[in-house]
Length: 126
Image 1 (cartoon, rainbow, N blue to C red):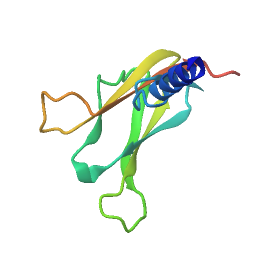
Image 2: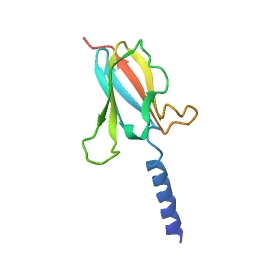
Image 3: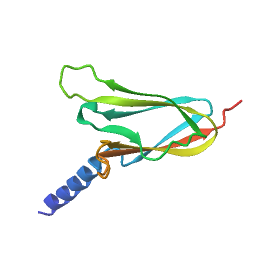
Image 4: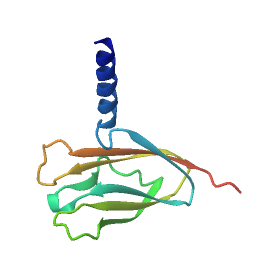
């Protein structure tokens, strides 16, 4: 009986960790001034949801170069794709990029998903 209890306790702990939700953990991206980098998030434009900046982008440190939705090549109706943003690091320092997955017309609804990235930009070595 004690073994079953311990097994269940471990199982519940592991499944809680594994299914904590996409984007609830902040990821760290490191680069040097002048480098370009991309952030890719799974998306499905057929649902009406789209990724948006949760807070305005710090324009003095990063420049948004491109943003595009790429649909996966499949014959399934409603198949997901990915949203890709490409940025350029402008100056050394630290900032954050946060996204929320929302429907624009649902103004008061909480985001379906969230994703956060801490950006660390170092001076380019000479």
